[in-house]
Length: 102
Image (cartoon, rainbow, N blue to C red; front, side):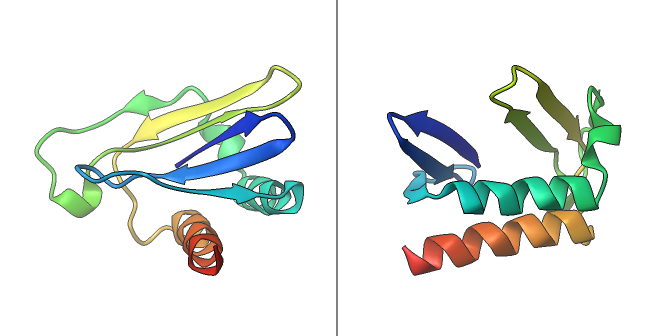
């Protein structure tokens, strides 16, 4: 997923490998919900981590999170997938719920 600012709007774009992206406009409140998941699961502790293993089953293939804050700070990590991780499930649910309501 990615979020970009276009004028006063924030556009959420979600792409699955090999498929076209789905995009919708989101509010600042939605972005706060995303940030709340990041804080709740202390994802900043993973910042800068970039290590993946080749040849894993598809559900464990690499995943990444990249967040560029207005302050200029950046959160980024890339790692082997954690399909059962609570933080990943919460973000997935948040995005799918938003896209379903759009």
